[in-house]
Length: 242
Image 1: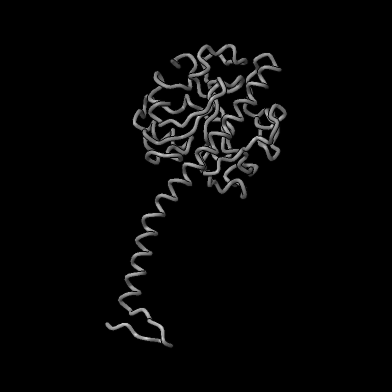
Image 2: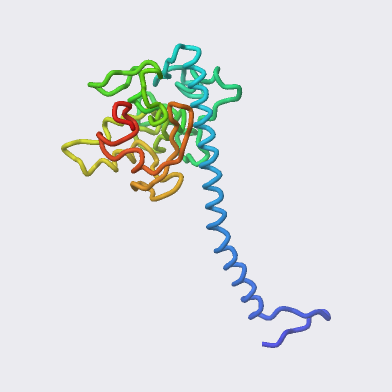
C-alpha cells in the first residue's frame, strides 16, 4: 500500500499503523511483568519494615516491663488494633498495622460472619506458642522473652489470612496446623491462617513466601517449608526451634 500525502505531509499507511501498534503491545507485554515484579518487591520490603518496627517496639516493651511479651487481646480495638496498641508507646513513629499487599475487604467492611461483626484490625498476628495466654495446652506459657532460649530462631509475628476465620484475628493457633486424623490437610490449614505465597513462590504452596518477625528483633521473608514442616519440625515452637 502506498504512502499517502495529506496536507503536504506523509501519512502512515494502515500497515505501518498496525506495525506500530504491534510494537507498542509487545513492549507493554514485556514491561508489565517487570513492573509487577518491582511492585511486589517494594510491597515485600515495606512489609518487612513494618515487622521490624513491631519487633523493635516489642524489645523496648520487654526492656521496660522486665521481659514481658505482648499478648493477644492486649491493648484495645482502636485503629492501631489490639496488641499493636500496647506496643505503640514504644515506637517513635506510628506502627503500621497493614501490609501494602494485604487486600482483605474487612479493613473497610465488617466481617458479618462473627457476632458482633468486627473489622480487620491488622495484617499481623502473634504466634500463639509465644503468648502468655494462648499457648497450646500441654506447653508452659512463656510470659517473658528471657524464657525463650533461641529467640533469633523463633517466630513471633506472622501475616494473617485475608479471608476466613483468621481474617479478623490477632493471633494464629500453630498447634492446630496438624491433625493425626487428617495428616494431608496440614498445608490447607496453614493457608487458612496465613496468606502463603503473598510475597513470592507458589500461592498456597510449600515454597510460598511470607514475611516473619522474630523474637530477637529481625524480620525475614521465608518459604513455608523453612518455617513449618510438621509439629516436630518448625520454628514456631520454642521447645524445638534450632
